[in-house]
Image 1 (cartoon, rainbow, N blue to C red):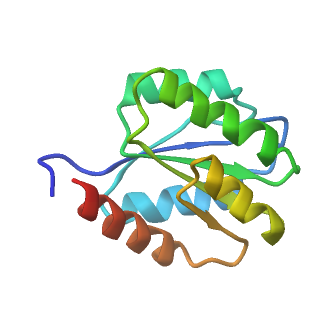
Image 2: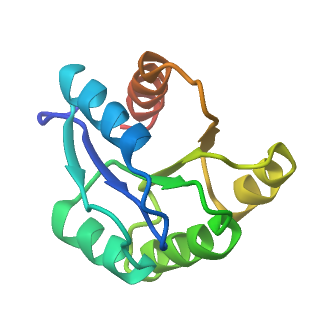
Image 3: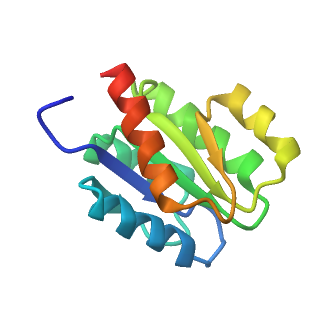
Length: 134
């Protein structure tokens, strides 16, 4: 593993104001020893990309509950790629129809976590995937 803690940038892109789930995940990831930055509510894709440039995360996690994941997630992924951050793992969580998961994966999302996913599963996934690539 690398010489620093795993860094995770979490964001609520779009107008959705529900942040309970992402805050629970953030707390759990911090307790698991990861460094977590939460951009807060209502971030634009451009703000998420800017934060990723500033924070140098291993993972960008996006939470969606308002149905705008197919519009906003690709904008974040494209922005990361345009700024040389294509190697940053992108994870999504929230209320996302299962039929959209293959579409999101083709866009570059590594994994989608649906409601009810235990935070420990998310932490294990991050640790196992980052360990494989670094």
